[in-house]
Image 1: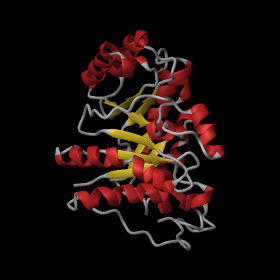
Image 2 (image 1 turned 120 degrees about the vertical axis):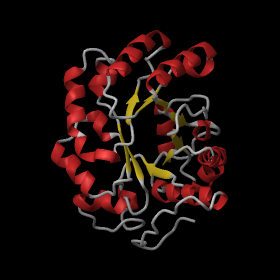
Image 3 (image 1 turned 90 degrees about the vertical axis):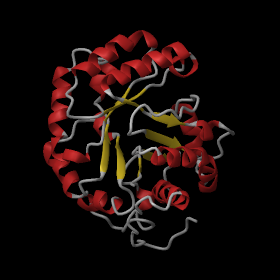
Length: 283
């Protein structure tokens, strides 16, 4: 039984000298991150499709069972809104081929302006995608969370091709006023949506954002500990990404989330125990 956990990125200045070595050459950053976590979000591919050589280096730094969630490029999801996207999509799919089995799912993050009236375009797009990959869709318009008609319709569209609905849980972030500049920035930028915990497939994906206070983040994820334990007992294979507004403690927190699940479910395979790169100050 295995649980995959990770962060929004594999390199962050605050981790070096604490969890990761410092200095740390770029070619070794993912390898060092993978000693702590066994999954990572692929946000960078939204802004620019990487070269195959770059992706080959990612594959070389990670084991076969490491999970990447590459985000489809911005021209596909936000600029062309899933129509007439053959060229950028083809280039993206070609670029990520070297990841092989490490590509856990392709992440289709849709803008807040993607409304229920756009579901036909999503359905058409999903049907045309190659079946060699899994797909995971993230929506941010409130109608999908507050109107059961549109929630069911989206679930039907995703279910037709076996795609997952990515959960982005910001409820802990917004439950009390921000206390740091990073939290204030997150309040301005992150979606304020109801929490959704329903898995559509055997591979649920959760993006959880807490607070810059690590203990408040831990307190806030107890719902997800319960949910992930249930999913694992059901035979599902979840992936959980832990964020905080400044992400300074996210790497250690993701590892701790895994430990907290194992405390409830000891049969979960442990993560590697990384060698501390410096004096630990968290927990």
